[in-house]
Structure formats: C-alpha cells, structure tokens
Length: 413
Image (cartoon, rainbow, N blue to C red; front, side, top):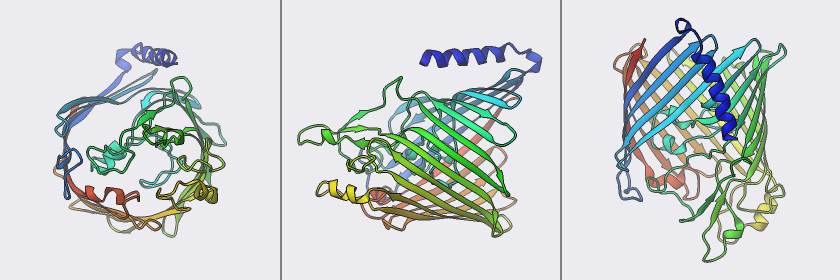
C-alpha cells in the first residue's frame, strides 16, 4: 500500500518538475519562533516546572506550475524540557486539477465542520497537547498522509478523502500534565493495510446557508481499554475501536450575525449494543453557534455543544463497581470575545468553556501584539478546574502562563 502511494506522489511530482522553468511560480517563507509555558501550580509529574520551552524554525516552500502545485512545510525545534531536537514534515503535498475536479496527494491538514474548537464532523487527527500547552493554534491540527479529491458538478460539490495509515489524536503527555490513566499499558493500533479510513463531504448553498452532509468510516482517535486485559496482575491494553460518523451542518446569516448548526451520529461499530463499558457507546453530538460583531473590531462568539449517549441503561448495568461513570448527556457552553486596538495590531481575546453537566471549565485569556508585519508576540494563560475525572478538571493542577514570539522570514521572492 505504501509503495502505491509513493508511486502516485512521484508521478505528480515528476509532472510538476517537468514544467518549463519560466512557468514556475515559487515562494519560500518561514519563521523563527520561541514558545514557553510555565506552570502556576505543582511541578509536572517529571519534576519540571515548564510545560513547554522550545525554539522553532519553520520553512515553507510553495511552487506552482502548469502541471500543478507542490507545497512543503517543515519544522525543526529544540525542546528544552526534554533536551532533544525534533524535525517534522508538517505538510507536503501535490495539487493537480483540471476542469471540474482536483486532487491533493500527500501530508495535509484536513478541516471540516463549523465548531470553534468543538469538533463533530471534523474527525481528523488533532494535537490536544499543543492546545493545552498554549502553543499557537495552528499546531492543534495534525497533518495526515491522505488523498483528497474534489468534484464540482453543477448541483453540488464533493470532497472524498482516503487516509491509508491510521493516526491517533496526540493527547497531553503524562510527563508534562497530571493525567489520570491506567499507568503502564500496551497500545494496539490498527494494522497497516487494514486501517484505511474514508470520508465524504457534499456541500452546496441552500437558501443562503452553506449546507454540508458528511460520512466517515474509520476509528476513534482516542483509545479505549480492552476489557479482556483488566484481570489483576495483567498489563491493560489500549486499542482504537472502529467508528462510523454520519452528520450535517448549516451556516448562514441570521439575527444580525452568523448562525452555525451541526450534528452527527457516532456509530460505535464494536459496541453497538452498549455492552462494553470501556468502549464508547453510540452517541448523537450536536452544536449551535452564533457569532456577531458588537462594535468596530469587537466580535462575540457563543456555542452550545452536547454529546448524548445511546443505550445508557446497558452502559450502567455493565460498568464495574468503583469506576467513574459517564453521564447520558455531556454538554458545555463556550464564549469567545475578541477586540482589536491600535489599527488592529493589538488583539485582546478571552475564551472560556464551561461544562454544564460536569461543572468543569477552561479559561484562556490572551493578548497579542504585532510589532511589525514580521514580528509578533503573544502572552496568555490556561486555567483549568472541575471534578478530577472531568475533561478540564483532570488538568486542574496544570494551570500555566505562556509566551509566544515569532519572526516571519521571507526568503523568496
């Protein structure tokens, strides 16, 4: 399978390289960045006080010719908390299009859905450690090796995505964050050749609203405990259950703002009767969002989000004594307010999530200042609270402040 993907990539790359040099449009940019986060509470489980401390160099190459487009984005960073260097290809893809279709092949960032940091039909991998550590928001999304085809007939548009190699979400490292968990475990990932995931999105304008339908066949990106490995004295195994998602969304102008509606049915294919308490049951997820500009350069966004578990009675019957149980309805609300000053060079923002069911919260105030077109700096805080087993309450000992500084590089043209 990997050889087939490499052959397709080589074919498209060869077509681009064969373009006449005079027809190539090349752009080379990047940045130097410092990113530091220091805890406000007890030391990390590894004894360090810094959640994050790194210097990072990113280079971006964008070349377009008659045959298509080649885009590369690569990072090199030095992590002071681990005393190690990291090199990562974040994106590297080829674009080719003709008439009513196009194709993107390679490592790419995939984003669907309407939520502001709340995801229903955006089933693609994410780096939650990056978000919770106060890194720039672009690092929340993880690049995946995929093929994405776009089809554009008159009546609607379609995106078809194939991801041949499973990629899980990146969760907070238990050495940096005080995460509850089983301690030592064995991780079982879907095997190569049987882990291809498929996703489809169809969209068009209806009565002034952007309407989309979604379908996905793949895996949960957060692991579940395998019940057969829970015997005393054995090492627990974590695996990624099969998942299918069917959803819809609509977004358009209403009530002097922008209204967003989204829903999805999560079909837990390895626990459809809800008999395994360690595998997520089927769920219906839904979101209502509203954004409005209150005054010049001042924008308010509100969201209500919920996850309703199916077969809840069966889940309660099978949950072992002493284990913290999930709620039938887990819902939360969020507010984001952003105000720009000084000709939009100074940005103050406030983001907060509050769990209505679990009474937990996350508060993220931030100030960002653009010194020039190439230099900006941001400072903020991540404040968590709530019950120990709730989503944000489990990070209650990981409050921290962070600082980001970036210098943009323009190397070509």
